Length: 451
Image 1 (cartoon, rainbow, N blue to C red):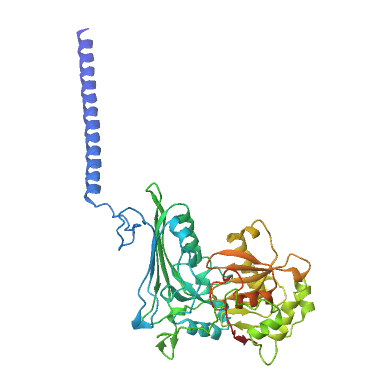
Image 2: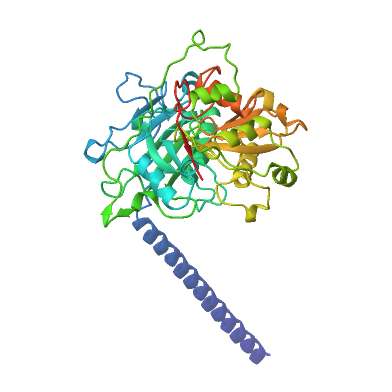
């Protein structure tokens, strides 16, 4: 009996010792793990937190007495033109509010910037339509109240300016970001916005554009925020701002094109009794002496499924394809073919460009809710597209429909293309339909035929 009790006591003692050892082991493991986590936290704490990205906060105009947060009343400033390098534009900076955009409007291109003529010639040498492929770009866009002055203008490829089907730029263009900024501002954000041309050496044509925006919502939270670079590349490739001529950088120096003398028509001075037809156009824009372009109108009608307007047919017979005032390109009409078979810069491609922009851009009230059949007959050097609405079976009833890139707006003009041109030259519309001033209120217009 005594032996059994002794044995039991020994067993209990051994068990207690084993439990104690296990407890010591667990405690030791827990302490070790706690120490490891503590050391890890200490290590993390020793490394400094990454600094937040510095951003240009919206602020009142530096020279004003307005001490409020945000943009104050809003403002736009243009950098000094670079006199040492051909008077090229340097920068545009703006602090924008919805009230500022409601009270201030942008203006059309009044004269072309340094390097523009060279860029046109370079594009032509690449087999491109120079008016369609080289634009005078606003830094601070017209839609954002930017002015068409030389401090705010720069020579740019059309694909850098706006969407161009077939361009190597794809969806990366200035208009995309201008619309983003406009939408943010009109939604109530104060937005600090800058656009700066980036140049290679002393050239007057940039390699591209640095664009940035930072917005603040009414509740103080962060809004729009981007920083991008838009390269200045032609639709066929090749950057306009990196070209050489006989081993030297090109272009350098100032080469603005002032344009021919204009007559500032007023409504009382316009000879309203003169018919707005081809005879009136001849008087304003003398046609080439060797005649126009021969077109197989029956074959053209068969491919498009429509007869073309008689005034356009007569225009082609008298003038043919060519450039109006080195600004508006009116190309040779071409048969409708699948897009992948269409010639670059031609009627089929430009009609596809217009159809794409119709889906995304704003319209004037009379065009809201409509579905026009668009055919593009002209494109200008500010990326505007001039079309017909070919919905009616009678081509004499086709109105002119214009997409103005600077305003990102479609508008309708109830007349044919010849009358549209004449009334533009006479400044008879309530305001200029196009993004440049080169066809507005002109006493004499030049036409350059193109084979």
